[in-house]
Image 1 (cartoon, rainbow, N blue to C red):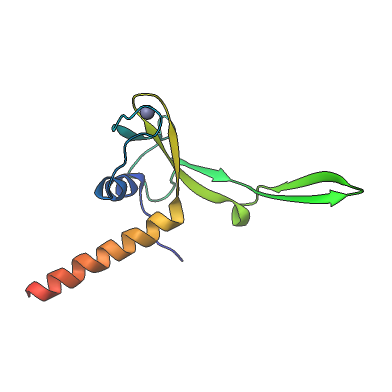
Image 2 (cartoon, rainbow, N blue to C red):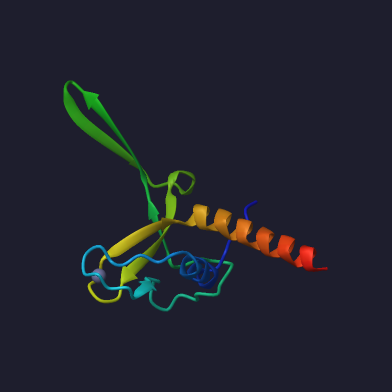
Length: 116
Ligand SMILES: [Zn+2]
């Protein structure tokens, strides 16, 4: 079972990375776009996530058709980060952020061990 990270932890992680200027307006003020009234520190339910469903596109008698799977297993949880100046939006893969968070924690622990 993967340990979830809270939106606050995800936010801290993103801030610790090199932030880029907004490609649309050159602004550099980014905010995480949570869902109103969600608890950013909750580890039980991460309300700020959006899901991207899996879409399967196929040909049927030369017509393109598609089916969409919105099941939890096939959905891709994303964190939405928005430019505070113009509203331009970036999406981050939540599972990748968990991975990065684990690596950062490991680095921190290795550094602490070096000092001891
Ligand atoms: Zn912008």
